[in-house]
Image (cartoon, rainbow, N blue to C red; front, side, top):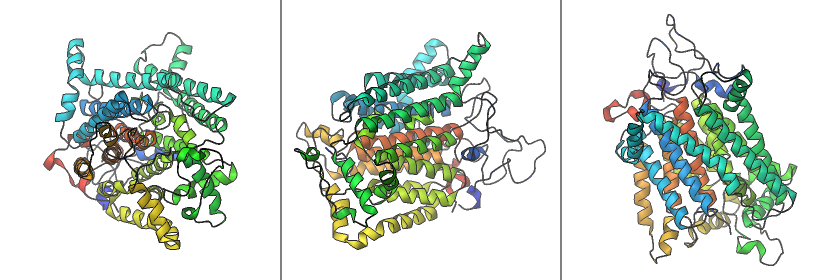
Length: 563
């Protein structure tokens, strides 16, 4: 069955050195740590240069997360990372428990993830009450151990991530349509990628000051550096390719409508007029055969892969690889960045990611577009950021929910948001003008008319088991609260990504039909938010993170838009 969801100069990006006015003895900021072997500089790493509205401190600060004098992460940074990754982990467990369908444990996990994300966004907005309640067990445990709370919070968070990515593939690797030897290849590549990623996290947490031998030192550095990152990325990509080869003709409507609509673009066929069917008994398991529920950019982006390699799913896999590279560019590259090997990869190696690829769900396109948008905005490439957001808006309908959040992000601003909306409409316009009724029926009406399903992993699906109807009023109130929290957390890339994740997650939790794929977009935004938290994203140099801003402490840098 198919599963779809219903500013100015003060904020400009400065590249290169530290500030416009020369300052005696100002230290330049290295983009590469001494802990990693020397490598050629990457264009995507330019975002690490400092940015700001006015010259601030006379001496530049290193990129990367703020640390206490003793070398530990500052408590606000550790709390934000713990909240974002705990939300991601809870959602991962929830969607993997029953392959994205309703179940008691699955529903509990996604509700816990929703609550943790809301508390973390409130923390970013300067209200740490809910986060303090959720973090009380960690504080008590840290007190018993005689350790600082950030020290324990950091380690508990990353051990949980290591367990999830390391044990997830051996325990859960569903293949609904795969057969043959490539199923085994995909499984073992997933397992190897997960174990290697987990080893990188544990090696970073347990890194000894004096390794036993030069060989041990090399292995330790490799697990924490680019070699491990590249190896996991190649293994995970190989698992995706093997998954496609194992299921060349999955009996799911999404795959066939994407295949046929992408091929039809070359012949000038309107996708909202097409019919897709396999001609087999029980065709597509009762899924869509004459409805195209997406926006046109979905097929436009996938058409090259359909025409060149014959399968749109290679395009979905490529979009995730692009997102990983953009997330890596957003994350820090300081010597104090032990999370570097695995953090960007969490966009790709979430539990059962090959299952999502096998089903041909289109969220990877949105993840790739939004990751590029964030990197481009943080690195001063405004035009590219506008194009990336416009393509996302022209791909799936619910990205429009991010428009208010993007307008509030100073590095993007209302003018760029308006330009992206205009460009997105221009992409969609030819199909609207060709047959407005067909477009409205498929892209709007069909999504709104979906009934509540009792196996939907959402509050309405849960309530349906007890004969309770959850009306739109509940959704409207919850969405208003989510937007309020996102508005209060505005000011930097972390606020945009985390606030956007909360808004989308709120809609998913209260949607009539929510399944595995719908959760993967807010999950990816949580990883991007973590990357910008650790890399300081587009925050002005020397300024405290947004978590420390309260009421009147909002400065001109956090409220002025860059157009």
